[in-house]
Length: 229
Ligand SMILES: [Zn+2]
Image (cartoon, rainbow, N blue to C red; front, side, top):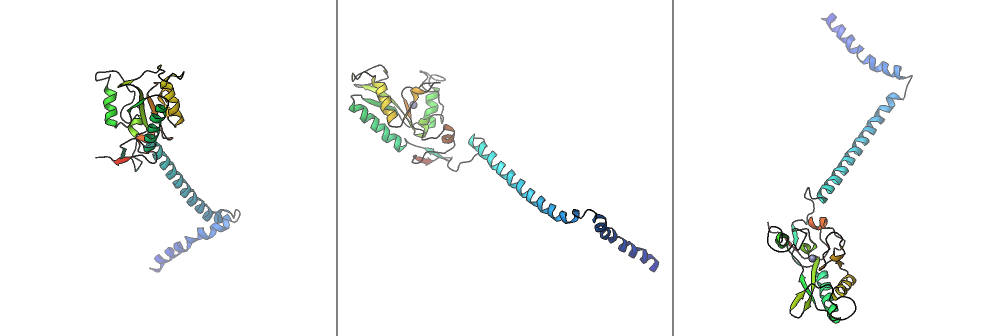
């Protein structure tokens, strides 16, 4: 029994030997052992850093995807615009008044349009009868966000789209006089668009792109309502 135990004791004694001998071996290169805890700290810091980096990249990627509409993002995206922006309404009223002071009768032929109305308008001249009047589907027009109006000229009881007429004999067409007034009030004119010029169209984007608007980011003061599910 003792003989059997003895070898096991020797084995137990012999096992720590390599550990105790290792400092002797490494004494020629002492930095290895003290460095080990340092490396562990570095590893921890590196892990923390890479986790934070991955998290930041993930958030950035999500934001990009949300911006392009692949994932839901904005908490306001369940809201929709229901009327012309008050600032645009005020400017439209001023435009009509200022034009009248110059002897030009302006008709505001369109202001806010819901996306459903826009879709109906888009079908005109395509799947339905009539002339094509818009290049924008529902949600693709500033009208759908209460940020655009269309104007025309009044001629008695008629509404006309005559860009040449100089009814007030000012030497500049009434239409372009209205455009000048509108621009001074802060409107952008659709007639300046190179792709599909839209001569009756006036809009104020307040620095908001269509993409932002489509994702529920609206200019301050916008008239919104919760979307019906
Ligand atoms: Zn328009």
